[in-house]
Length: 64
Image (cartoon, rainbow, N blue to C red):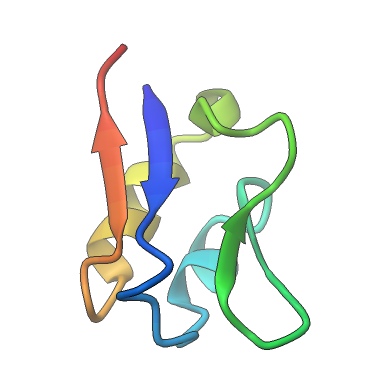
């Protein structure tokens, strides 16, 4: 799986970081980022739930 965040769509709600803190974080401005080395979801089952929780659907998951 590959995780991508559309930075133009992200509103910084933080639902991804709250749902899957082992995969997502927020930058200094509050916008979402994938943690370094976690671009593949790191096997975290909550990564898909975090994508669903995004209120603006800024997170894309693709199967590798």
